[in-house]
Length: 122
Image 1 (tube, rainbow, N blue to C red):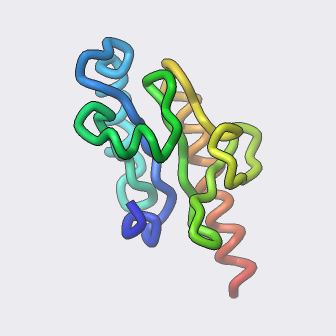
Image 2 (tube, rainbow, N blue to C red; image 1 turned 90 degrees about the vertical axis):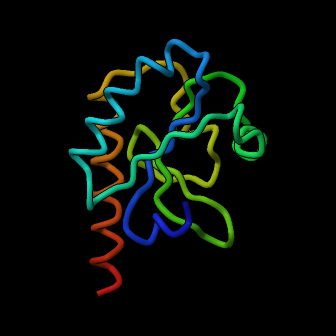
């Protein structure tokens, strides 16, 4: 994941094979991957196969998604739905099922944030 962050924001969906809501997100995740290829990384992880992710990200309900926009002082930085960034994932977590437009909005905000950071660096 850290390597992917060098290329742009990472949309991370945590779920499980037995979760019907998680399975219903698969087509949306595929569409997002096609639309945002080269600009953002779209990832899914099964918390049953990767229990350390469940613990690390504090997953209580699935599907659980977030957009990671960077790393500061060894901690992930997340995009919140209001366009702010935070190291507190609980403020940026998207729990349960959301529609594709909600995910697109969050990804677009994260790309704008990245562009603004790049302009400040230049």
